[in-house]
Image (cartoon, rainbow, N blue to C red; front, side):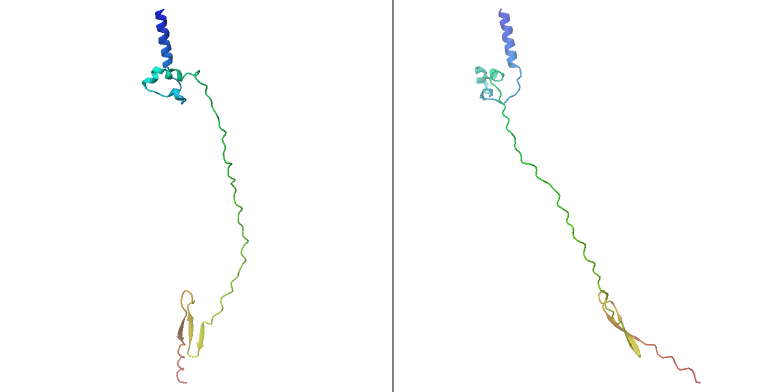
Length: 129
């Protein structure tokens, strides 16, 4: 009988020392050092018949997704066709009996400049007749 009692006690201790699933519970699950072993709250605190587990599920609320849309394309009318008038005709030569002035340059990239171009001398008269 003693032997059966020792085996039963040893079996109970071994079952009590089996690792239990970790659960962060009440104050009875707190580690109290050496004093906790004397009170046996470490042995009795992890068993499922000690307390009921209550799970409260809170409803989750979230903001609705923002509405994303592409902006309408911006369309402009075609610009009107503009024809620039031709540049006014500039007199580029001023002719004199003995020569002429010629206007050189365009006035934008090259400055205007009047250049004197003399006429060639008249040919000599034919030899005596």
